[in-house]
Image (tube, rainbow over all chains, first blue to last red):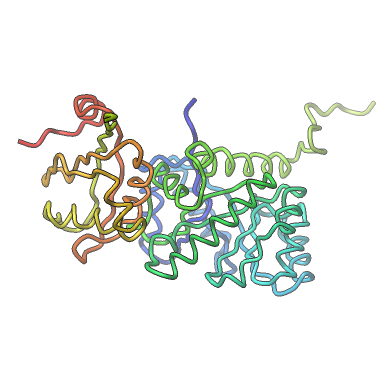
Length: 243
Length: 109
């Protein structure tokens, strides 16, 4: 069976000429699904243009929003306001309070821990247990692995290895994304998967992390966001007229 | 002594200007050494088999046991001889014949 590869985290500055080039290159590399996080600076018109560029390149564009909440209330407010507008919601956890709330909330799809500081990465066993119940996935961006060198990369790999081991123990889905904004850092899907070897994923799990897992998140949310969705497993097939 | 199983990797280089053969293999060794150290690098049995400057294609030979280690290291290459570059794996095979056939890699010379 052929895999459909996804990169749910391309960071593109739409004002930059590189945006189109990056999208075209992602298509050339064999990705089928890509996502560029929504920012408040992005207008509806630009978003439509972006989607059109992706369609031209033969890519399926996923609406994704990244959020850095300062508190639990901030997160709840954001989810209430934006959940139905985006296909993927990612919460960037920069405090333990937010990390726990995000892992508990079923409206959150992806948890991201970008800090290089070991003390600010909150994906521990308690977090994993909460995330496994709410179906939230752990996202690993490979960009820092590509640009860092020496002791910072050693520390990052150690943290990632620990987090991935915990995620596997609690069956938390793992998504590997590029997180890149430059063409030169974009990698082929299988090369992206091979980088996952550095933090302890075997070949099949690594390939799933760049294909099946992100695709399943998108498919699940698209189903939920469709007008025919009633509840998990229940959807409207046909509407009849009341007599 | 047990025979060492090997794999051949076809690579596509992407860079502004084409690096020399020496610069390329130095970059590969450097990436492996940075990630796995000198002992790790010594286990790979790495050798440059082919290098086509025109098509920016290279073929490496590695031991099967360290294939994943080498692939991960190749993906981390972001510069060669101080210039921005990346290396993409076109294919992996157990024989050179199959690699040249499957990956459309032209033989050098």
